[in-house]
Amino acid sequence: MLQKQIFSRTLGLLVFGIGVLSLGLGARALLTTDEMVTVEIQNSAGQMLKSVQINDEHGSHSLTALPAGETRLVRFDAHGENSYQVVVTYADGNIRYGNGGYVEAGYTCTVKVSRIDIRTAERLP
Image (tube, helix red, strand yellow):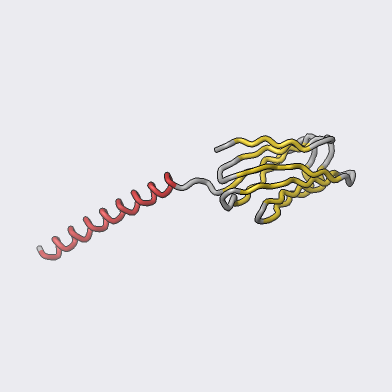
């Protein structure tokens, strides 16, 4: 009889603990946001891009060999408020610089690289 009571209480405490833990994890997931910035690089230049470099206030992120007509994503930690610039090296050796812009956590930006310029559009979270 005593063993049955101990088992019941232990099982009850275990179920209660699992419930509290699940509630805490669920609340944390709702209250935290994605700390990453996503930059979508679109190659509309009509030629291979030898490299695309995204330079933000905390580091550099590179893509190599982006074929004409293709799109790739670069993700980096926002570290709060941040900004970035784009450096593109075309297959023919030309280099262009683009002003990426201001970003924060959760921002998604599209960088469209053409033969003559680099354009950036931002989408807020």
